[in-house]
Length: 178
Image (cartoon, rainbow, N blue to C red; front, side, top):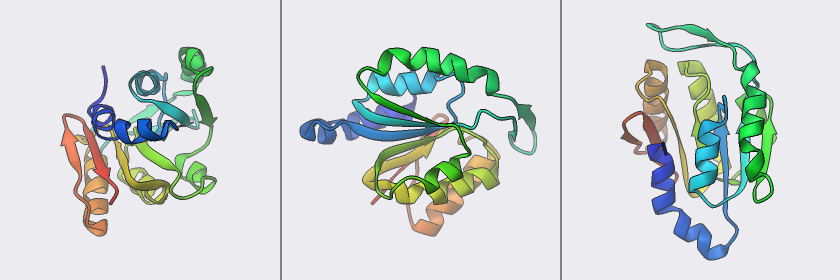
């Protein structure tokens, strides 16, 4: 199933990038088994996709539903799932915390960032601040699980601080960078 933010990008951004034949440069935070990354690769003309996940245990959830998540067994699953796309697309795994990965990337390099890792307020707030400068004007910063309290609070505060207008559809949210 294609997530709403990815559909939005496909409908709104593809024609611009297809005109210059370079394809899209994107990042996904929180790769897990690679299902959404595969969806991105199937539905968007990707030049380069950064897949950011430390694959180490973390606490996830909001105050009502906290659980320890261990994604480490799923790294190999993601590699196997995405292998067929490597011949046509540059796929770069960054096996580190998302905020650390952002520090190694130049500004205005990305057409989109999809955030779906650690859903705590603190983490999402840090990711928004770290990745927003990496998204070029007209690009999209968004993610999944807007129904999680921490995600909703972080996105709302970030949008208000930067005078942005987030859009939502079911569980996805996104902001087009002016």
